[in-house]
Length: 536
Picture (cartoon, rainbow, N blue to C red):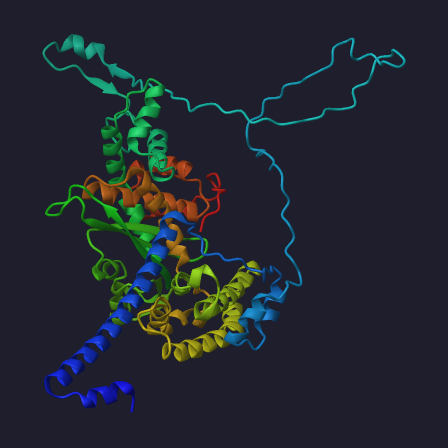
């Protein structure tokens, strides 16, 4: 019997009851103090994560001593019987074949650029040999290149339409109206405007590909003494977006006709929405799909982040969708014959945020290292340009055993890690949707994460940082359609400005579905300049 119990037993009456109340109150205070201390630790962790998101690097890459680019060495490594506890030794293993260093230096200028040759010669005196005095012979040229820039040029196109009349008829019939015939002018995308296809393409690419707000573009034109108000350019963009609706519909059909798709969404502020405050969040949804060589990227504006947006897009769709853990996708996957593939990058991100002081230690560190090995397998497959059948076979042989061990490890740690801790939340998030995280093993066309749609939505996010908001829902819908054309052109290696200029010339003449199909980006890869910048 402890001293406290002996003292309590010796007490009588009210004194004993008071002492018991004090002991009970002290125990409650101790438990409350422990709870508050734990809460403070979690809040400190949240503050650290938020600070990193705001001020730190957005990259999730950690120092990786096991960098290997050789295909067969990667798979020799991954074929070992790897336990989660052995990952520290695995990560510190020296690479047998370090990757060769890329050649540095200036890249040659494109041969397609026009060239102006300027010859530099010696004077007559310098052409004499300083040794013997004889004339020296020319043995060739030493060539160096410089790149010259000329600002954009504006040209006014005067359309002079010939008019004809019959003078004889006019002399005989003084009371009858004169007979006049006038030459027809080609159809325009925006009738009775000064906008040519090249000007429209330049404006749209400047805003939606180069992220220039229209007020900046207005000032750029003013430097060339061109008065082109931003309101006019905005109205042109809206009219163009209506004219391209048939093309957008065909791009959407291309996604729905293929059985592998990607989906993601991001916020957008629309100032003037009926019945809503200007600060209310709206959403841009991004859908990616289509076979290799015929990719489509669709953007759609919706007022809310509800399941109806995805359900409406994927109506009658049968196939697989890469997505995150948002409940709206869960409803879509459960209500239709659709295979859900969740993003392993989200799992990695959860455990990266739970790393103690940013160091790969403990449960989080081991999980991050194992996921890194899974990504090395995917990287090796990509470098080898493996076929879907080969990819599926390698994943089942190499990735599945690692995932099985990861599942077993997380099940064990779930019982001992506090549920509300950062690590506990990461474990619960992973195990709750485990079946969707490993779906990518079932088909070589599936991907380990949803990075394709996240990369596709990034251009919109970058543009939003520049022009901040849309004024009306009509403008938001228009922006979504124009982003669709530009990013789909990029995805098919077609230069977006040349693509828009071409289709703006051809759209006024389109009458049948076949005419619009001929304007899809993958139908024009041999006619238009190639888009040389890396694109997902």
